[in-house]
Length: 415
Image (cartoon, rainbow, N blue to C red; front, side):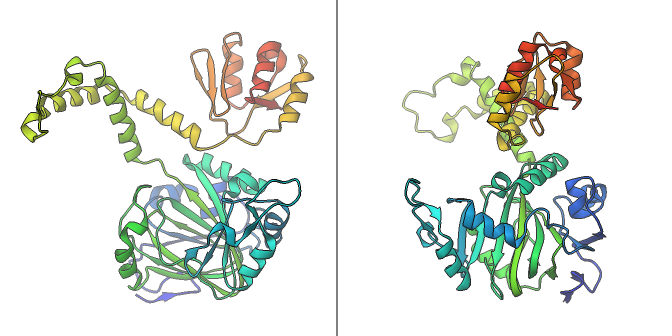
């Protein structure tokens, strides 16, 4: 089916690609900024099909990243690998090709060299800024908002490509992506998956031949992204991009989805943990076993395993997944000096609030979070509930000693 590179969709019916309505202004949620109607996206597109959203404002993402910001990051922020990598002709260059010692007193051997990077970019290499959700404040904040909207962890990379250059060959990602076109124009070619919803240990490099053959077919979508446009690709969808007519910059927000397979992993882990209490399951196989099928006691082991699986409750699995979720992201940035000053100046009237994106829950009399755990046994239940609900409280409400512990542990900040 032919595709129109300007309207971003096929001319005929039956497309698996949905075009969302244009965004004229930033919406309240991070997700709505990318897809327009977040509810419709969740119902019809999440994990299922690409979504192209044209912007009414070319500067829709200028608050997140710009060409000037790219120059600042690589020239003035002292980035080291792996926060930068460079691709040339579809392959990633070794670090030594774009790094150099940091100079007198730095003791850093792998700092990004702006001289080497400039030369490589002029010769057609693509610059990839990795982990921007950890180093660039506007992107840090947006990724945390988007992760809260989605319920899944989010990371951010930026791809800076010279004119008429393709940074990477056709491939698929093992995570969903939102592509945000920041500057320049880039042609995207999208093909249907060769493996739907791949897991993290099922990379495209394991299926190179299938990917190559699929990429030779007519694309499901061939379009040109303009500044302000956004494109959503579920994991597994093949894609490649080529810069057109000038330097292009786009942000890729990678969404590392929690999957049913992850639920199964935790369910089985808990069941195996419970089998450690079963004497028969712990028993040895017969002396001199050759590990043939009839010597493995599969009937007994299978029976005990099914019983263990049946004994695991949803709350048990949820608790293990919540622990993994906390480890998968970080709370909002925190200034150690500001927290020290806050703790030193606490008074009964000091207004406090829960640190953003802390993923805090109450476990008995302990407040568990990404920043650690703190006992709140002496804090009134109503005050703890208010704190967890996002309300502001005073140090007097918490109790001076509890307030100080929470501040020093980084769970609460100035309100």
